[in-house]
Image 1 (cartoon, rainbow, N blue to C red):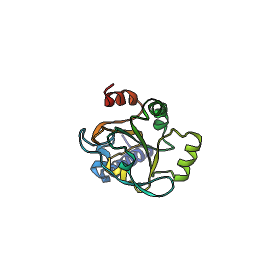
Image 2: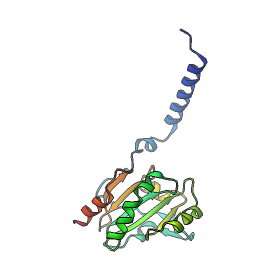
Image 3: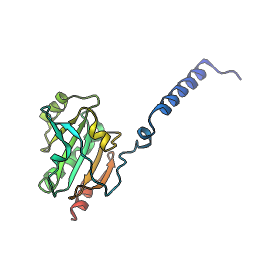
Image 4: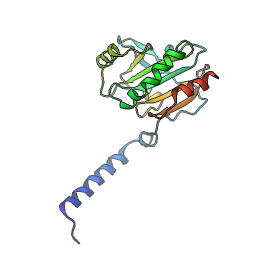
Length: 177
């Protein structure tokens, strides 16, 4: 049985794809389901930019003694858009009890694009721009729609990814209500 040209082409494409996957650092695809921070470990800080281009520290946006919810977010992320109603409700219900910070990843978006998005929908919490990926690396956030919650002591209390997260339930658990 002879291979058809399309079968040879398909095998060649599969071989190239496998070779490219094997060339990636192990951590890049081994952690593809979310973050690899262990619960109870201190939430790392990272230098990012505010939307005016000033260098800021991520944890400076977390109020001392107050739990925090961090979302790794992008304007083009459909899963982030699907999570937005939960974040709107979170801000309405618990905004005075929890610090919420959106970390806009620097992949395929600009500060200008984030500002345009916020002009249409400003949820009332800060958005920081991770131009150089410092927060992405610190949190091992390998995709968008990743949510990390820090307890009042600044330790990782929750990590999740995707649209099936119960953000409000996790916050209620974090607040003990």
